[in-house]
Image 1 (cartoon, rainbow, N blue to C red):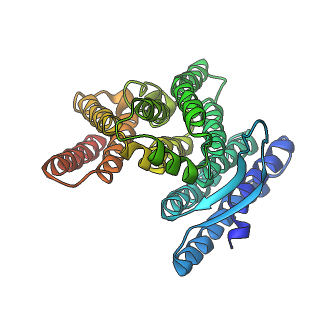
Image 2: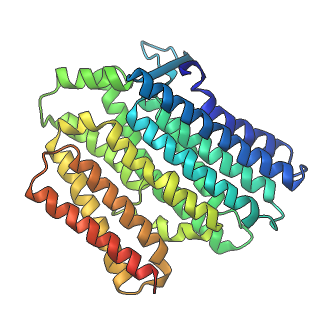
Length: 353
């Protein structure tokens, strides 16, 4: 099964190409079949991969080819599946499939039905590349693909200038975080000579002592990317406006893909963060601040930001949760967990108003 892992992101990508290149000439029933069927096929492959992973009890990996070979820099197009990857794959393909099925009827009266599903398929494919990537460079390709698709989907109804403005805002604000992430990647490669997760982690552990200023700087720059993509303070401003897109887009961005990408990045590089207590504390502080801000917005009855705030609450809770997995559980951890639970309850209460 490991030899077929590449099909998981490839099938939605093929769906995108079919729908995009036919320029809306396919009948809507066939568009839905391609759009939903490609994600359903990926979900099936994820299930089979999960069964093999549980049977073997070890990570799965496959390498397709060497992407670049310049001056000792030879990143591979390779995919890696472990427990963390499978968790994200299950969310992306499982929730993503349900959203696609719902969209097939919800968007049925749209004249740009084919264009909508082509963007949705590309979104899912980019997110799958992001979580399957075996190195930071390939992850960044999926990362930027998700950012592009958010722009296309949030501004889907671009005839309304407000929707176009919301799409531009989401795209530009997240680019701020992406720039920080790119600089962090440059810094890691300059000092460690690789962006592959396993050798990069091993080199960091052997080369840098705990709390190294260079490592802390790199981790904080990576965190900058996560802050933008997961709509954490101070780059959370794009999230409420992202509701300008169709309802399925909001569900896909908030539940299955984009805002979970930052949490995944921190989790995937958690061994680097473990070497930098300052960076870990910053993760916790930003997550807690975002959590409190979102709850305050909703308690004040800010209707415009209500749904966006709920998403921010969930992501803030997740960021804190990932932080707690990296430190010993104690009284501080218990208080933070209680705060998270209370914020979730406030979110649900406000949504029923």
